[in-house]
Image 1 (tube, helix red, strand yellow):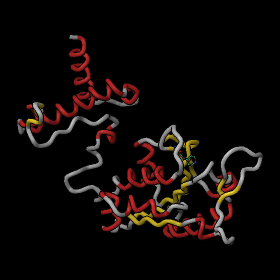
Image 2 (image 1 turned 90 degrees about the horizontal axis):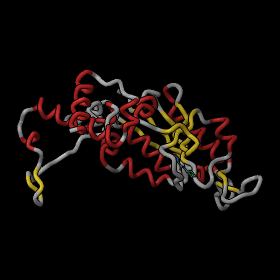
Image 3 (image 1 turned 30 degrees about the vertical axis):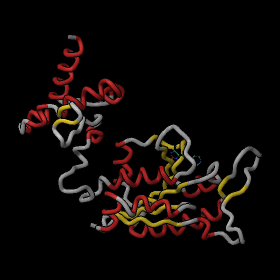
Image 4 (image 1 turned 135 degrees about the vertical axis):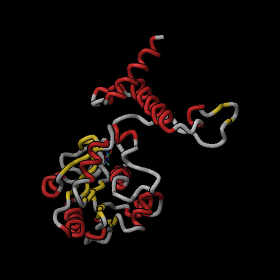
Amino acid sequence: MRAKRIALVSIFPEMFAALTDYGITGRAVKEGLLEVRCWNPRDFTSDRHRTVDDRPYGGGPGMVMLPEPLYQALGEARAWAGEMGLARTIYLSPQGRPLDQAGVEQLSEAGNLVLLAGRYEGVDERIVDMLVDEEWSIGDYVLSGGELAAMVVVDAITRLIPGALGHDQSAVEDSFARGLLDCPHYTRPEEYRGRAVPDVLLSGNHERIRRWRLKQALTRTQQRRPDLLERLELDREQKQLLEEIQQEWKS
Ligand SMILES: Nc1nonc1C(=O)NC1CCNCC1
């Protein structure tokens, strides 16, 4: 299977070592499942100071990223990512569509991607108009740069690449993939500082364990994120377990 290509445009390319040098994303790169490459707008400047930003028209605080270095960096990034047909260019910003697992699945099905990570107050809007296909946000808060947001997107998408998770894990098993919060997890020792592991997990009865984990996930989702439950089409078993949970709450 051809490697998924994700191009990044950022003035801090070294930050992406966090993706390429560690964990599941690092292994995906090593195994040729994922190719990540960064273009730095500073390499597309012509002045001595390699200037990538300037003051905003209309005044106000902060600086805005100049269009030309971005235009050239994005041009090369799009050519590389789009070498097998079109690549979708994504700009990470708080003005974007809020990212959730459904959005991650959509982005992972979109083929190769170019992720534009802005700094300062943002990028000149004409670059968004000319070259950006979609804006996405990883949450309603303000970061110092789009790089961490871009890495969140790459990490979440990589988990969906066939073979990226170890043989003993499965993205489908991820509770969020089922729209639920995760169940509690335990490992050795069986008793830790006076706190024991739930007996069911020591029973070896895989059906009982599966059911217990699902009930825990439903309980947590009901308690902490009832909004997620409202969006879900629960199957018969989940409805029955939710009934049990609500009865237990009443008693
Ligand atoms: N939230 C966010 N999801 O994606 N990007 C986000 C973000 O805060 N970007 C910063 C906004 C201010 N300028 C520097 C980048």
